Image 1: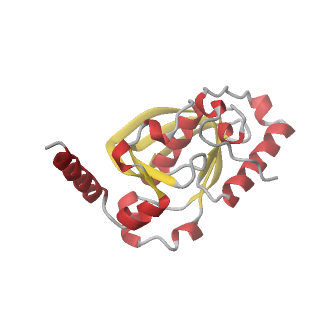
Image 2: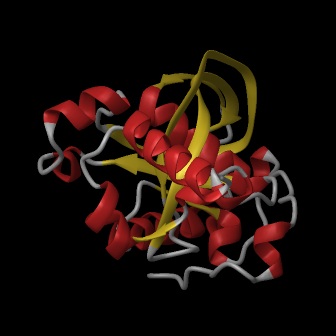
Amino acid sequence: MKLQIVQVGDPVLRQRSRPLTPEEIRSDAIQKLIADMRETMQNAPGVGLAGPQVGRPLQLSVIEDCEEWLEDVAADDLAERERKPVPFHVIINPKISESSGGQVEFFEGCLSLPGFSAVVARARRVRVECLNERGQQRIIKAAGWYARILQHEIDHLLGKIYIDRMRSRTFSSTENFDRFWSGKRIEDVRARLDSTNAATNK
């Protein structure tokens, strides 16, 4: 069943979600919620969807970055973002236990704030401890775009949205992103905005 995606401004997006017990995870209700969230994410389409985004303040996210979605992305862009297909999986009660590789910046969007994006700095690599959809312990070591997805989704479970971390001067409508920034390297985006800012402050 396709669920309604909660939009920014709803208080559920700003509260810390509660953890789930292994018994709850294996219940019919949570298993159905996982299936419904998967369908909702794929129909949106998106690469991740957190419990709060469908009105459930639970520490549960579904993630998938399908290979077919990457077919129309330029090889240079995929390489720069270290983006590869990620099979469908579930993270429950996740915790980032390690971040490394420095900070990298790219444009991000969100299904709870459609039509906009902004540059966000994230750790290049993360180690995440969580439970899977069967309530079993799992450790995920991720780099590049997958690490970014994990950090974005875990933020949702803590009541945070990417706009809390964004470079505010890069916040853009999708139309203007396509017009001004699509295909440009982040270094070029920063340089142009920094030069504009410097000229404005003269």
